[in-house]
Image 1 (cartoon, rainbow, N blue to C red):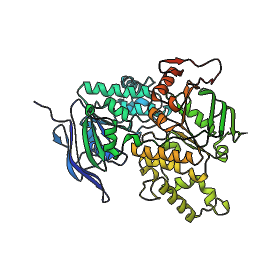
Image 2 (cartoon, one colour):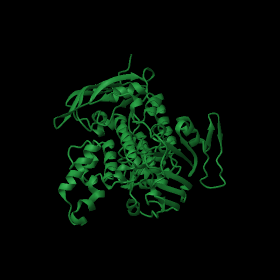
Image 3 (cartoon, rainbow, N blue to C red):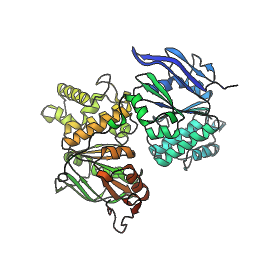
Image 4 (cartoon, one colour):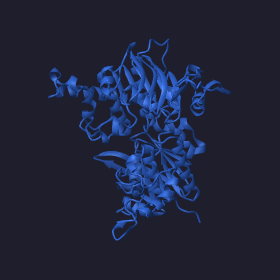
Length: 522
């Protein structure tokens, strides 16, 4: 007898305040299958997942689980009890509780009203090992980095022994080893007859782990494809109606001018050593390498957020950048990696975030006691239009925006300050392909207007497609510089993994490690 699908979404529609976000969406998840749910931000993916997990109820249509329509009183609690686990990009952990307490939140073993901490830790340990975390279960969760917290969320979902696991953008903050741990869990679950709904904006991940792909566009399913019967270009066309080749703008032409900012022997203790960089107007420079090789600290040092040694010059003159205030005076802007905690103030409005760096210019006579509301409104309207920020109104809380629009706000707020140097850490992490394209073309326009741009990215294709040059870091030192025909994914990956400059396709030359930060050129 053929088993019914683990899950069926049948002709489901959903509207909010008259705005229809889902239009007769249908999809199925079979036993032992990984289904990738693909689409741009705003395509309806999160709404579909909310219907499955009981956060929302459909206006029409139905959700069927194990052959039975879910009841009208379907809720997250009932979904978990029925074997549906979920992990989302938004963390739900309590940073003040231990890792073990978070993993078994709501199900702590106790005696006479006292939590049995030792038993709790012992129960958590194998789950943490399963997701690739070698940590003390009694460690306070707030001490973990973002990637570690995401894996704790996965362990928490596995504690409920789900037969259907929903992974919604869980890999966006993970390094390669952590992604491999997630994939191992997915494969184990699939081999045991379980099923997974996997959501990611990383196309390579979708094709690496899924069996089928269902594509959403504007709240409707455009197609479902077997993985072997489609490719990247096909999926991108279904998502945004454009070819993948249109993703990146043309690179800079002509000879570069004199550097606007120079860093020599830049060293952040414990992170990077002897880094030399030239940031040139009209050029996009990338920092490549595996995650955690010092890229983030280089950007933070250049913005005065990390204590450092070495020499920095702006316009050929020495510059002491010991704080963000000093960096801003040198017209340096920084868009950090974690937009939700550092890039934007999520509880404040779009208007407040966009106006914040320009408050002095918006105040009459540059006195911060008052702000010209008219000038502020004009500034916000101009930035919203220029970057095509999709918000209900300027008064909308920034946390209500999609990830891509939050990133646009984090970048747009700096533009009125007329920065000459723009530093961006992981500028398109967790963003759909359509919004990525907008940001890539914007960064190229800013460079063409005379700005020097420096980015870090864990996306090899992004570095190769966008940057004019990539400096590859390995254990905190620049080991290779790639530009022109030498800037290929193969050479970038080889240098990142081996820590050696690629002299030709079949050979590498080891960097001179006798001098910190020595550079071997391809």
